[in-house]
Length: 364
Image 1: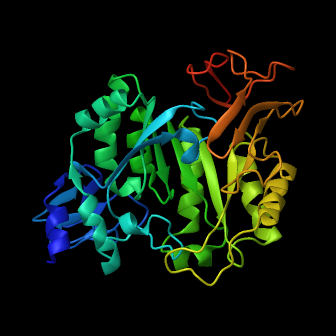
Image 2: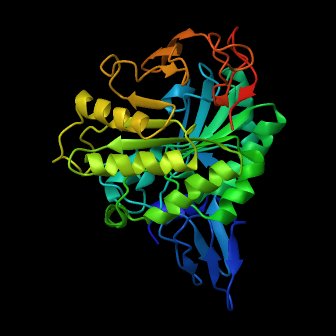
């Protein structure tokens, strides 16, 4: 066992998301890999493991903890303008070459990522919730690494957050299982899911299975969670018109009220050959989303370069209801019932009482 794994294994607790197999073998249910863990074996994520017939999972620490705008997650229809206290651990069940959080996600896979151990800080769920109150956060968010593989920890934090009157959310790759999603749903308000490609082969390249992500998006919506979807548009990887149409049509079938964020790629980690995404590509992708029937489409990461696609528009009369620049809200015009003040169309979302003109919830 390496020193890195010894340090991480010291910050674990008994897991809940598994089934027992023959003898001391366990089937992990935290992500769609459903790893079969014989005694002494680790899952694909490297942070969940079988210790003498007991599943051990990450618990009791953070490797990232920051208060920032909820729009940075990005959530545009969840308590706009509010502060989110975001916490993260280490590890992931996928290995994307362009990961922008690779220091936290690729620990125990890439030796260069082991530097992230220096950020590890022991903490309890109660301390996270207390800190959220101190920084004026309205919600707590599990992010930075893949939160589904640390779902027990998120569940424990979210339970206490809910008791304190806070909303809860996850920022996930969506490579989940129905079991873990149904278990989290009672303490989870919202989930942001990355839909990285509509090509099964591309997902295999990244270490996942496309269908599991599609199923997670649909199930999260069916469970009543607020769902927003992000596609990082990478030139030469997933930016063809055909694939963008396929993505938008799938989301519109789940619900035309699902916000779709198309965001700009920049060279990172092991993907240095692709060009950075130009604004023209994001505008083309966003136009496709609108034409496919999605009511709320956003283009991100290029503030001031994407025309009206930073703003929330009324899908009926096209009046701007929330104007943004980057992560800042410049103008907020929703009514107290979450409706367009011009035509009274209900706007799908979970709206914040922090705004003088906001409040309530509208949508599916």
